[in-house]
Amino acid sequence: MARAIWTGVITFGLVSVPVGLFTATEDHTVHFHQLQRGTSDRIRNRRVNQRTGDEVDPADIVKGFEVGDGEYVVVEPGELDEIAPGRSRTLEITDFVDLDRIEPVYFGRTYYVAPRGEEYLKVYELLRTALAETGKAGVATFVMRNRQYLTALRAEDRVLLLQTLHWADEVRDPVEELPELPTGRVGRGKELDMALRLVDALSGPWDPARYHDTYQEKVRELVRAKAEGEEIAVAEEAPRATDVVDLMDVLRGSLEQARGGGGKRPSAPRKKAAAPSRGSRPKRSELRELSKAELYQRATEQDITGRSKMSRGQLVDALTGAGGRRKNKKKSAA
Image 1 (cartoon, rainbow, N blue to C red):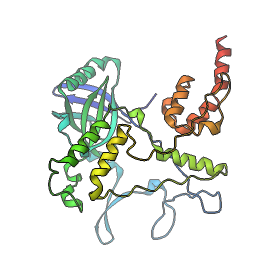
Image 2: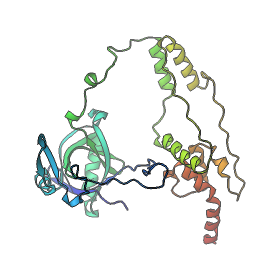
Image 3: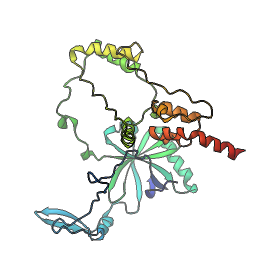
Image 4: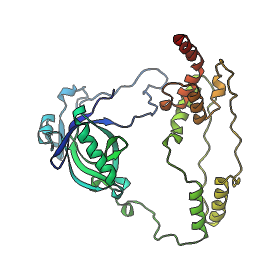
């Protein structure tokens, strides 16, 4: 069971409900240790006094704000807690705004919000339903870990989401920051019509399960290949920029490809592993030829627990051991 990273009270008008905040996402990045080249010795970071070079105990570290050359105002952690707004741990909704009016650039991290007790379910669901039916988001601020956040409270199916928002002065103006931007809108013409047809041909329902982090899969495959002394596959180079002169031909070819007309030379078909015979385990070399979607389908057919959160490498590991697990299942059920 997940633990709340913040607890407090949501208020709107005179209504309040005690809630807890839970992390909604998790990191699947491959993490490496730092080693000294040529050894297996770990490298560790230490906090040292810049002047003396001596290591400093964390209890002896305070915050300092530089007001002059080498002059600092020292602030103790307790002093920051004393001035923090919302010390009563209140998340007060001050405004309700149309959710679709908040520009995407303002959104930060997402958290799940849950009521802290069965007795608060009714009020919690009342707020969630009101937001869902009006298409509104509740704008509120709260303090967590010595930092104040601007947030948008929004409704999803059965749950309230809290999304942190950037403050207005944190969002950069693209016109001022970016070196090149179009000066006008593209006029109506054959190129735009072709682009619209291409977008329509590639359109479909939003299904997050269709997408996965292929780079992290390649990192895991790199580590596996180096560990087993295998040859490392090199990625293809990035495509060249489209020449404006050939834009219409490129668009036409893209549209034919999207419709299955073969606008581009088809790549070599992926070699598929033969389906394993009943009761036999598939070979790892065969499974590595499959895409993650194909591996997931195999895992679904074999009812492998936790498959939705597995990486490509983990699916291969689970499938090679699935036969033994199925036998154990049958024995326990007998």
